[in-house]
Length: 549
Ligand SMILES: C[S@@+](CC[C@H](N)C(=O)[O-])C[C@H]1O[C@@H](n2cnc3c(N)ncnc32)[C@H](O)[C@@H]1O
View 1 (spheres, rainbow, N blue to C red):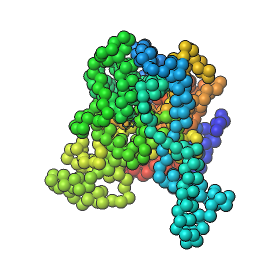
View 2: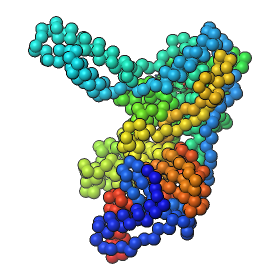
View 3: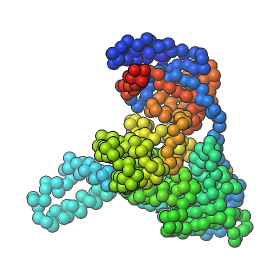
């Protein structure tokens, strides 16, 4: 939706009308400046998910050091050399391997998560309806109409028809398997450059904090892309890389790539450990745990959450989850994020009560909080935490965590409410093509490719209360004299608003933004048509009055 020049005054009139209707006492109409005055400017913002309007006060973010995140990550020369060397030792001709690699690229671009049992049931129902309407099957008259034999035959027929149709859709999911070194080679040739670029781009998020992992766990390590990306991000700090993959063929090939040119013995780094499963002891933890395009390999939603719970348990500080940009992948990432957020504040009431009783802190108030059915888990958690003897030791189902990136908040994802096709939060990374057939580029590309993905980085502990996370830029449209930004904000969901040249320094800042980057401007909603905002403002006013009294 485009915003006209006088939209601020129109929105302000609309908002004032609504506020007058809602608030009993008349409040003076505030002045909203549209040019950069007193270090701020006001713009009209629209929430694209709810269509609510508001007026946003924009101020340059204090202490924000803008860092341009590179988008293009060519594979490091050691990995290129290692891959070339490993390919030479394959039994298949390079041209054949390249042909297979191109086929894998094509196939994987359409790969979907396995459907849940609910989705399969729904699909079966639709198919049955279709068959019925075509009169192709009489089986649905009901078993009482036919003999047992006829019923069984009809059921078999139906099952065949259903599975034939399901195969054509995304329900034909199979886990990735590598039966030979050559299969692993073709997969690595196809995917290593792209996967490396994705992981590098995500790891660039850590440049804004003081973090250098000593130990790294890569679950579903496949081609070894995570190893190369971590090595190039923190070359000196890592003392241990643990690469877990159930497939020997792909791990062997990843090892060969790491051997480097002509070195048939050791790997390029001494501290790399390949494993088929996690170290049994749950005490063994890693500073950084990464699961990159690994959730899609797990057959059911329940097993995926079980795995996330295990990986979270094995994490000292950060857990990174990366999947493709497709909607079902994005939903799986959001489900994993929400699982940690919710279970991290869900308290074990029995243990909490015991601990409180031990410290003589179990009173009417704490009992009332623990029994309240209206309060959310996070509200209860926050209230009990204030009263708990050692807040860090408050017993929860899993360790408490918050979203480090890309979301600036821990609430539900506002994109999930958007219509189909717009839901996923997509990020991109460019990579250089690497081919084994002597060509420098494929027919379609210019020698580089772009990979799209979605991700989340979860950090252990509580979101720091003293700092507000900057909004995340989701989209930027640049026109002459105006930049229209769509951002995901810490408190107001999604917001779309224009920043025109009149906003001076703010316009210059907005012009530097790219999708996926942090927004260098603070936005405070000063008025909004959102009921939530009106109520919030009224409560603030009431609170102010009662404090004065
Ligand atoms: C798409 S690849 C992952 C991408 C990987 N980061 C890379 O660089 O290739 C998925 C990998 O997960 C492995 N895998 C599948 N199921 C697994 C499981 N249950 N545990 C560990 N690894 C698994 C597969 O063998 C495969 O190598």
